[in-house]
Image (cartoon, rainbow, N blue to C red; front, side, top):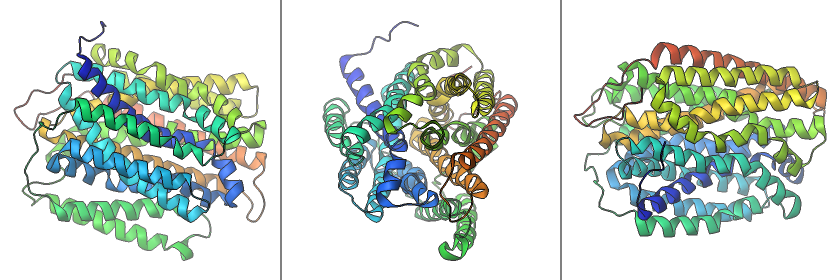
Length: 472
């Protein structure tokens, strides 16, 4: 594929928007290798430690779809700048935090900023690069995001060892300034603002309902029920989501066009981020703890050890974009998830064996993930009309974050079920729990292969007269 003949302004806009999402993804991977140090400094249990990641992803997931709707309504550029300001300010607060409460509160505000950033950046990108250029642009987008995914653990480990974990948040400040300058100069405010009435009932019920469900999942560990009200949160969340879907049937301008749920390709692509979170993303949280307990590595060593899993996210998105042009989407996704599942099998075999097996398994899983990660957003945007691109980006991102939180909660529960209450986590116990995690990764990958083969082969049905990007 030849290098696209884009203008300098388009390249600056593309890189600026991509680095905004890079910063959002970096704040997941840069933190994971620092978790053991944060746990030691703040005296946290494993269940408490998950909130350093979950408080960010919980708000991110709960508000992402609403943020996409607001971006469509009030202007994607304006919403982007709001998200950038929130993210930068909360990053500074997290960097200055010296208690778990302050850190988690700042992380929650980061999640709010990230929701506005991701929903508006994807929609802006889709507008700047129409037609076939969109797939190539998302390939570049995926490469830049891959830099954060690939080198985030290494950056986090280096900073944690030599400066301190507080600085993994403070580095966001100069990055945010550079992003602001790039977008301010190259992305004009002339794009259409869709003056449709806001669905306040839908936004409120969806956000609160998803928040309740995710909160319940995140507190689902031994002994938590009576203290945290897990059952009440789950019941309330389910009820509110029922209200949300019921309200969408009679809203004139709903948040989600329920007709899309009859489109098997759209439903299939919205399930893929959840399954990838279970089979790939959650491993980034738990493998550093495995490297410390079982392999004796520190934060920097864990960051280096994760490179076989994360580097493919940097190297493979352009190749994934080529595959999106040349292979039917159901073949592309099924083959990629087959690699993810095979990698989980090999990693499982390598937990107690030579490190070469573990490295091979991480490479396989990282390769499968890198081939499809960026293209998930591309497919989601491409199967809806142009004026709903913010909604599609919001749905795709919501499924990523909700799946990530669900995977962390599920995998934390699996580890705690094999641990002994009141005793420090031993390497043998953690290895047993990690083995269970890898088994769920195998199952999620197999489910993704079946869904891809069964549903992604269907052509998307346009909801407007606009031409959609052909993906097969």
